[in-house]
Image (tube, rainbow, N blue to C red; front, side, top):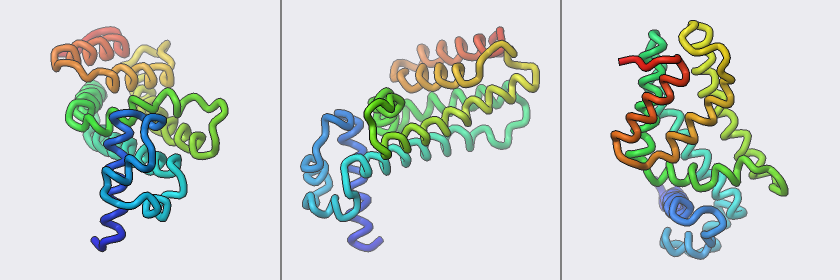
Length: 192
């Protein structure tokens, strides 16, 4: 990795940490520069605005989340095991990748609220919507297999699941209870 790409990665890592701690509005480009050990103009060399920098951090966080949870279920054919693996992988992500989880959690409401936002925020929302659609497709698969209650709206369920799991930075027993609650709600019963 050459020095410029190394500086770019340091900027992204510093931004990720700062955004996870204080959110988009609570962080300045000066603070990110200090954390990354670079001068502020170098940040603007790579990222023309704080919004564009945040977009890169946001997209990477969602990509890592998707890779983590959907990789776990891609080769599973039995739906009940698939949904359980999905939920456990999501819980694992939230508990083991706290910085990325906090970036998503802190800014989800801002991303979903398009009022008065520019093009970058609209792209952030579309990217998050793509993620929610993948979760909804997993629920639809269960409905097609007659394992998920057909009355459940897949999009609403996807939002509830992702918000419940992302906000759950509590103990393992609480997360296990949330997992059981989600399974019960989707399938009308809990599976052992």
